[in-house]
Length: 138
Image (cartoon, rainbow, N blue to C red; front, side, top):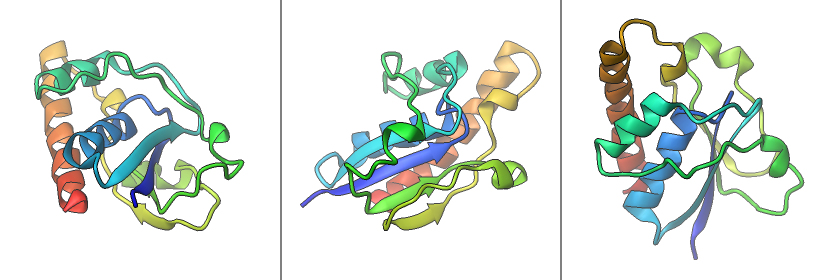
């Protein structure tokens, strides 16, 4: 039986989207996966590009609110927050019985610099998320 996993961050525009995409990529046979945010924003175009460079198309993803999942219609086995440590106090709490994990990653949406610098740093964050998800997927 597949386990249900939800990745949560503030805007569901970058980190949680990458984590969701990688877990689907590596272990869709073992996990059903969702992602959501406390204040859903717009999908980060730099993240879309960084993922495409790794062969994963998330351009059709939408951002989702945690409110869509709070009613308990899905029982999550794992609730994974991916907010960075500096924003941990703002990271959403998700009710339910699932095992809670926190994987802190820098927010690509907060990066400054040239477009090339932002993409380069986003790729580094992407690779950190990829490694963590790959390890989790087994």
